[in-house]
Image (cartoon, rainbow, N blue to C red; front, side):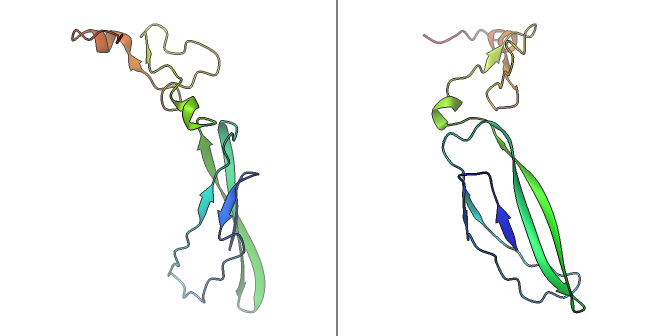
Length: 120
């Protein structure tokens, strides 16, 4: 089994992992550590896994992918966003990410209804 990640990422282990002979209906858990590079562009990136195996003396291969969502390029960028919007304007600008990277915000009308007000 091998795993590849976005360019600049570090995947550990970085080489193929040998999986022991596994009986039908059984599984073998595998774990990789992935360090995503600082500054990786926000958006969707792909992880790709490839398994080379032998079945009844015939070599074969299968592959799969998983999407990795990077909401911010850095930790600092995660703190410089809009977390409260008006119910009448929940998407204030193109590419709006909200506080979670997918456009979610708190309702300005909802948080002020019980008497809360913006901080200093």
